[in-house]
Length: 130
Image 1 (cartoon, rainbow, N blue to C red):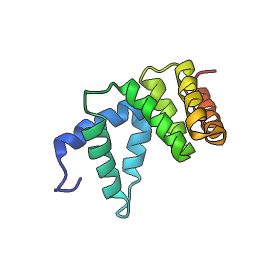
Image 2: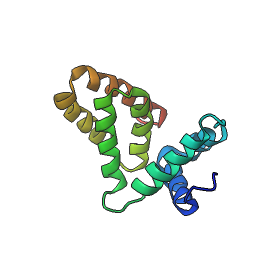
Image 3: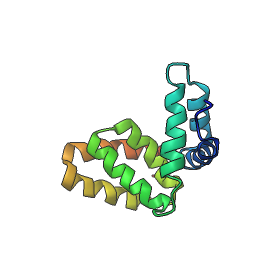
Image 4: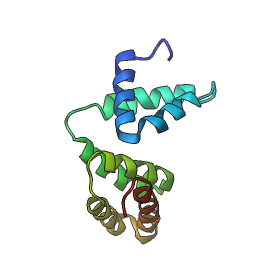
């Protein structure tokens, strides 16, 4: 951890990141960081997970729904898969995830939603769902 980092915010972010994405995934991301991308991992943990996900104005369920919609709009299928698992960990049902993706179909287009449905189906199966 770099000296200029807010250690309390980093630790808060690390805890949230582990709870949402799973400790194994997060710990591997941090363990496998190199000099090239270590600062990126630190900043994602501190700012994304600590400063933003750590806010109380939206629930984790709400943040998961927003993330799935934005990641679909951006065509970030790998991240959709990861965040579907996080959404399940945050208490979203498979049906709620499907509803978010149906909503994205209207506003982001069928191809984007199709890619996200494929990623979600894989993530749900890996998470022990249908």
